[in-house]
Image (cartoon, rainbow, N blue to C red; front, side, top):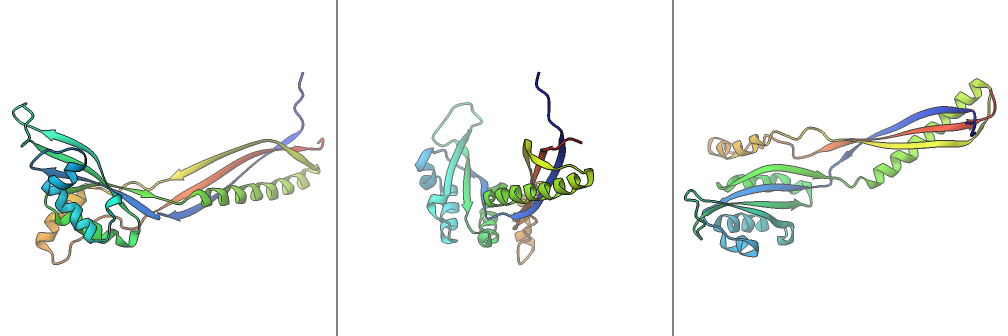
Length: 213
């Protein structure tokens, strides 16, 4: 029969705010004709117009991806002239350029920004948080052991979990209102985040073996 050694249970955490480093913009484009694959990027005039403007604004063609095409037809018969909705993913590698890209998308009457997916280089933050939480747990354990009059002998059990807090996404219906705003205002009102951050919290639970109470 295993006998559990005397232990003390310590919890500690490290919470850090980290900023997004880049973003993916998901855009739908309503086209008057249906094409698929690479043809869509060149032959669907509404898609081609948006792509051309994005490239002029500094986006690499390699950062513009066609993710899907939905054909729309009222007759139930698929025709070459059928309209379609094209779904694009546009990588914004430098967030300083985001306002310009939003303006480009808003200027195309057949394009809608559906959502923004923020991207983070958070591996360093996770490692840094884990190291900090473990150090804090050790300091706390030493203080608890001293108060109890026992000695720390080692670690009996260790558990780590990470809470990745992402702020609620902006209301993307507002993105569609940008087109109306352009007709009424000299400068468009973006009405959405152009900079983003989140909180990353690393929690540790450690059972330390101690000398007998």
